[in-house]
Every structure is written in structure tokens, then in C-alpha cells.
Picture 1: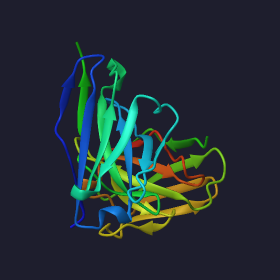
Picture 2 (picture 1 turned 60 degrees about the vertical axis):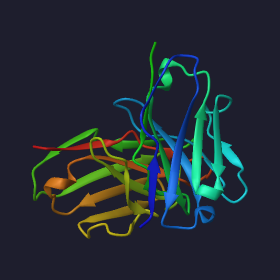
Picture 3 (picture 1 turned 90 degrees about the vertical axis):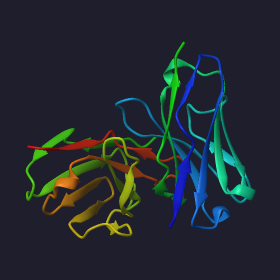
Picture 4 (picture 1 turned 45 degrees about the horizontal axis):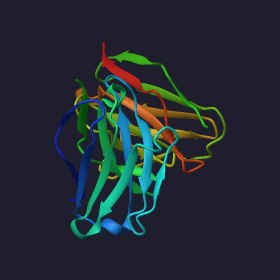
Length: 117
Length: 108
């Protein structure tokens, strides 16, 4: 079955970096885009952008440029989200989600990133 | 930027009742609207896409309607497992896309 499995929770200090992975299985990885969505504690969903898994070309939403980087390793069907210069307000659950005609299905289980000194 | 406004913020109903959730767009999104369900501690799940098409495996009690700026998600008869937060999403001017702020469906 189609599945996205994300890496585990992370606790980081302000100013550090974090890299979240999203491993896909059950389908041809390069046939579908991969999206990233943020959910701050107790808040709604915020689209961060997407990456073309064929070309590796990323597109970032407003507010997610500069410190956020999407990347791929197609040899292991895995997408990555790297966040640098972490701030307390980056504390959130980060989801990857496969893009099917630009709808999101399925989603990874989420990765909690906590930024605290 | 297209803003989606969901109402009500919280809906309190009993199992067996009919639920009607609303999503209004700040400008027309044609039929490019989806609904997602999110249970506590879980990832969202796609329920409805293109305003009225049920995603694979979604029970028939879930239905979506609307076009342009006004959309509705209807759950015909609530099951205990349906109590969750529901989000609408538009992709009319992809990219970007945007989500509504969510409606919490709680047990009365």
C-alpha cells in the first residue's frame, strides 16, 4: 500500500539545524510530487511548498524561503526537509504529503520538531 | 492570496445526527476544493477532492458539494469515529494552495 514514513521527533536548540526525512513506498516515487505542511501546536495546517520528484525543483510558499530546503534521494525514494537557524516559533509537527493532482494523499505520520534552549 | 473561512469553528452533535460543515473562499476557486479529516495525534486524511469526489476508501456517508466560493461537507449520520477536526483546502491558483482554519466536530 502507498505509505509515507517520516523520521522521529527532534529536540533542537535555537540556532541549530534539523533534517526531517520522508520515505515513500508502494508507488513510483518520481511519478508524484511531494509536499510539506507545517502544523504549529494547537493550530491549523500551513502549506510550506512542494518538490518536483522528477526534476528536484523545489517551490517554497511565502514565509518558507531562506531557512527551509527541500531535497530528494530518489535512489531510496526519500524526500527531506531541512530547516536551519532554528527558532522557537519553528516548533511544530511537519508533514510530508504526496501530491495527487495537487491534492494531498496520503500524508506521513508527522515529525515533531521542538526548538528549546 | 485566497482565504478560506470555515464555519462553525466548533460543531457539537450526537452520533446518528447529520453534520453540515461550511467552507467559504474569498474568491472563486471553481471546484478546486478538498476536505481533510484529522483526528488527535494523527495526520490529516483526504476525504473529498474536486469539491464532490470521495477519495478511495471513504464511506458514502461523507459527501461534498458546492462550487465557486461556497462549499459544504455533509456527514449524513455521524459515527463515533467521525468526531475530529475537518479542514478544507483550495488549489485553484496552484501554487500556492491554502487551508481553512478548521472545524472541530465534537460529541454533544
